[in-house]
Length: 129
Image 1 (cartoon, rainbow, N blue to C red):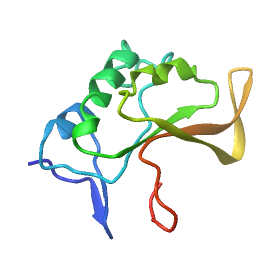
Image 2: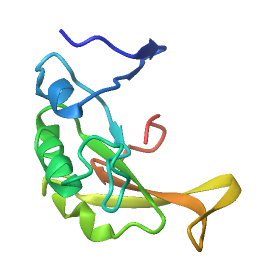
Image 3: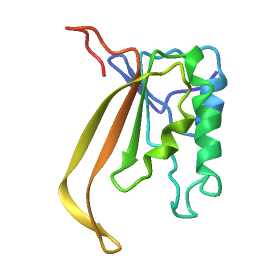
Image 4: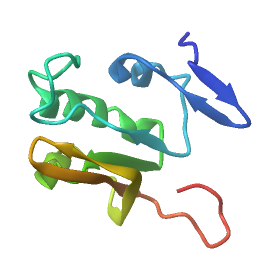
């Protein structure tokens, strides 16, 4: 059984190789939020050699455990990376996640990430994504 990195008030966070956690049938979630390894990431991140392959393998495990998926990518990421999201998860929202203090990433002023939401939209009054 997978142990949680953090669990409190109905929120559970797992830290590790998501393919191992997602493969366990005991895990169910209202929403899965992920900040996957992205193309052109540093070689210190596991999966940097094939980020699309890693994300595809993980995303294909999601339909059996959740109704919603939120993928966080840097504002300079290529959104074609999201082609790995299974067709069961229909796109429904994009949110800009502003940083409080912008920083430089090379010559690029980097001040936000983008969250892409997929799956079953929440109903009016429903908490969640």
